[in-house]
Image 1 (cartoon, rainbow, N blue to C red):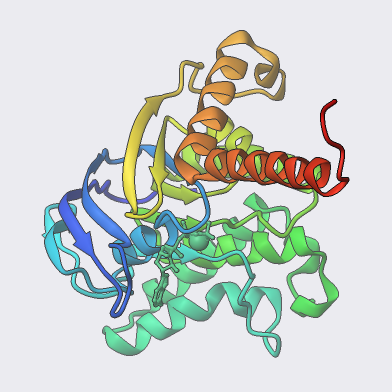
Image 2: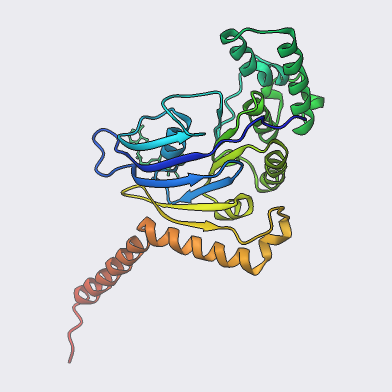
Length: 292
Ligand SMILES: Nc1ncnc2c1ncn2[C@@H]1O[C@H](COP(=O)(O)OP(=O)(O)OP(=O)(O)O)[C@@H](O)[C@H]1O
Ligand SMILES: [Mg+2]
């Protein structure tokens, strides 16, 4: 299977974005350089701007200030060089698995001169992706006939069809059960090695982040910003047993603590404790007990 023909980096410099009417920026002064072929995972508390940053990289969101480039060129709209996979499989229910995978390539054919070599190449690519994703036996089934994991494999195959140098994934395995997620993790790592795409992946799940990433970008909310960036101290080729290694567990602990500290959850817990203490004071006062 021919990998992506060229690699692409993504560079954000002092990127700012505030949604109209919002109290705080969704993205504040984001500086991030994602290397070509790198696997970067963004984690952080809900509302810290992970999806906003990813959608901005996809060219689906505008930004207010700063620079954002892919392969050295400004990102100013969607492009076939940057494919996106969402949490919900977004397949076309009236198309078979094979036609869903071919769909994007067909759209491209309308914008470019199409030769018979292109058609042959597309057919070969679709077959190769079906094999890679273990979908050959369901090529002619419809999405409603597939499990969630299989539907997401179709969505990934469709995203890969145009050989995008960059793959952007927003909680792609968020709706899957734990066992299916583990299978998908190993599959996406295999895809990354084979296709040599740059992958930017968003998740809530710290374990998923460490298992997949070369680097984990930890974001913090209100304003949405990068808190810290962590190179994962594990061999490039991951195996499930590494999740029990001291390096893995130490980084997991650190990231979880940091997410709790930056999310404001700690403050809320403190507040709850304070409230229950005052409630206890009121109750003891209300009981009319007077010291003798
Ligand atoms: N379309 C929008 N219009 C206005 N505000 C938005 C919009 N999308 C996101 N926001 C706000 O921007 C901030 C960042 O949201 P974003 O969805 O990027 O966070 P997230 O880290 O992906 O959160 P989650 O983990 O819950 O998916 C939040 O305060 C959110 O309410
Ligand atoms: Mg999100």
